[in-house]
Structures are given as structure tokens and as C-alpha cells.
Image 1 (cartoon, rainbow, N blue to C red):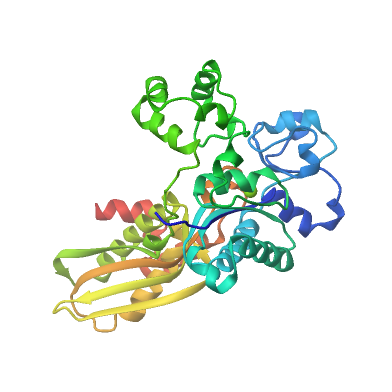
Image 2: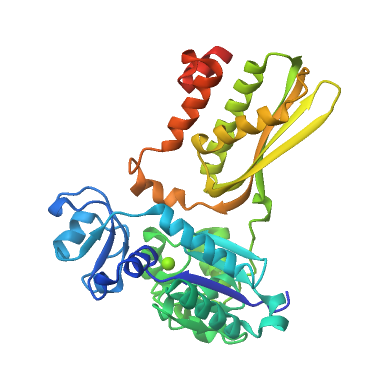
Length: 393
Ligand SMILES: [Mg+2]
């Protein structure tokens, strides 16, 4: 494979940095974003710690009570998921201007393959500098970037000079770069594997490189043995996988017999909205455009779409829009053959990470409006989704 240029972009202490930006009075204070510490009796965990808080040994995923014990005078803040999500979407949109090959790893982290962008924007380090500058100017936040010929090396590199780091590993210098690094940085190595590596006297990637392939296979099996043998030499040809296949997500149903009763059509659409919402959340995605498709007897088909101000990934966000679109589309009053709903304009929602902290944070007002819409249409009988679904199944 010819040489590639891959960037790993990672925001520094993302949630905490956003909070510091939003509230300048916190400057210089340790900031911990996460569960309520309840004076040391809180039961949740730390979602993010500012660099000042890290000096007390506080890090993400640490029990919040432990963080409180280490630093009771820190500012303890509840996560504001929609705020971080909005910042993240703007940053990803910016990254996508440098290359369309962007693979998000989480709400604040991505791989970029910029091999084809170098003619336009300069070499990998120049692109990394430009991205860091844009993030700082537009969001007043810092990112750390690793530039290398593989994902593995780029990810290691981005971590070495945090915060506000930029580490470039030039093609050909991968082994020299890796040799002194601790083996703890090995991608996906759990405590058991690390223990085994230590028993074999392997502390660094350089140590690992001295083992023969068959020794590694004997110790770690074929798959991992081969993988370790390659990784410690800087060999990793996994491609950066953009989210192309996730441009839209939808479901549709063709009725077994064409349907005249609009209540049946709407109930079916309702169930499709639930399925789409669940699928979005499973994939940690949210969409801004809702499209409803309707096909009548005789194959006449119409689609109607609406774009929302903010991405949605819940039934309550999708259904009121979908049912309105259905009614707009359904002018013909003929028998219906097919109904479908699709969400597009998809973004990483970050909800998978945030739902832990956000649960119960705010009752979704859209629930109320959806229920109102149902009442208007079907009367009191239809106030709950469960009631509707039971009737149908
Ligand atoms: Mg980060």
C-alpha cells in the first residue's frame, strides 16, 4: 500500500473545556463534569476532568465520590449533552472540509485520511495546524493531533503532547517512534494481556519487536500474535472508514392488502417511527431531515420531507413531524399500499456516551406535543403509545 497520511484529532478534556469556555469565572479552577458528588456520597462517575483537576489525580470514569475526596473544592458540573453535541457537530463539519474521509470515534475524536487533500492544503502537519487553528478561533477550544501513516501511530501520537499537542511521525520513522513507548499504549490490550506481556519482559514496543513471530503466536494466539508482530513495527493498514453508509436510516412497510383506514396507516407509521428512533440510538446517530413516503394502490408514490432545527433520535422528536408530513402527502384518499419514514442528515449524536449522565435531566417536551397530536386525531383513547400498539398487534 502506498503511503497514507492519517490524522487523529482529539479534543482536550472536551466537556470540561466547553464548560470553562462557557463560564470564564471557572478559569484556573479544577473543573469536574459528571454525576452529582453529593458531598462525597454521589454514586455516578466523572465524565471529564479539566487539566487542573487532573493534577489531583482525577480522571474520567473515576467514581465521582473518589474525585470529591481528592478535590472537594473543584467545580462539579452536570453534563450538558446538547451543548457538547452542538459543538461537536460544528467541529466535525469543519473537519469534513479538509477531507470527506472522516471516521468519528466518539463525540470529540476522529480519524481523517488526508492523503488526497495534501495537494490542496499542504502536508499532514500543515493540515493539522490549520485544523487546530480553526478549532481555536471558532470554538475557543484546543485539540491535540497526531499525524502518521497509520491509524495506530496517529492515535498514539495525538496523546503524547496533550493538551494542545501536535506530533508528527514521518513515514519511515515509525519504529524509532514506537520503540521507547510503554506497551500499555497498545491498542485494545486488557489487563490480562498486559500482565502476560510483562511476564515475558515486554515493557515497551521495542521489547516486543525483539520477539519472533512464532514466540508471539505461542503466547497470544494466531490473531493477536500476528497483530502484535505487525503493530510494534508500525504496520497497520486499516483504512479510515467514513460514515458514508450512515447517510440515512429508514423503514417502510408494504401492506399485505391495500388499506383504506387512515388510522391503520398512521398506527403503522407510528410503529415505524419507533423502530427508526431505536435504530438511530443503537447506532449513536441523530438526524435532521424526516422524510415520509406514501404509495397508493396503483403505485403512485409521493415523498414529503421536513428539516428540523436540531437533530432528533427519539420517537417524540420524529413522530409529530412524520404524521404531519403523512397528512400533507395523503391528498388522494385512495387505498394505501406502502408507508415509510426515513431520517437523513445524520450526525453522531454522542447520546451513547451522554445518556448515562443525562438520564432524567429534562422531561422531553416533545412527548407532550406528540400526545396532543394523537389526541387530536384519535381522541382520548389514544393517549398512550402502548394503547395504540396493542390495538394493532
Ligand atoms: Mg478527547
